[in-house]
Amino acid sequence: MAIELNRPALRHARALIRDGKVVRDERDDWSEAAPDADEENAFIDKAGWTEYSHWHLGVDRSENAQTKKAYTFPFGNFQRVHRSGVISGESRAAQYDHAEIRDALASLLTLIDDGDR
Image (cartoon, rainbow, N blue to C red):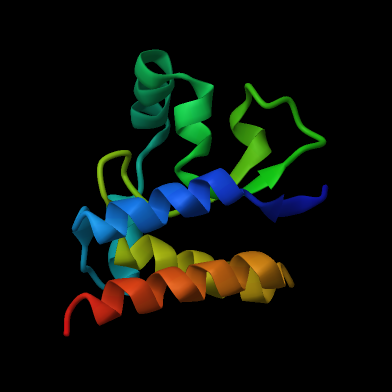
């Protein structure tokens, strides 16, 4: 399993944050805010796999691109970026030595928090 940074998702996240489509919640809120399997399936049925991929900063290119297994490090609820998802992902990326993803998530967190100033 070789998870790498999903650059289109990073661009998508930055654009959403710049457009103010952010929930400024706390880390522990992600367990409630993260889309569940039914919400993911409904989004895929409506928007397709490419759009689904744009909500995940990690991609495993060894997996079929039309499976959920190919995507990791979600950061939002298919409408807005959740600060809690960014924080959770950053911690998990650091834990599993995904430095590029960790750094991308850290940059998103800075972008979110700088918007509060």
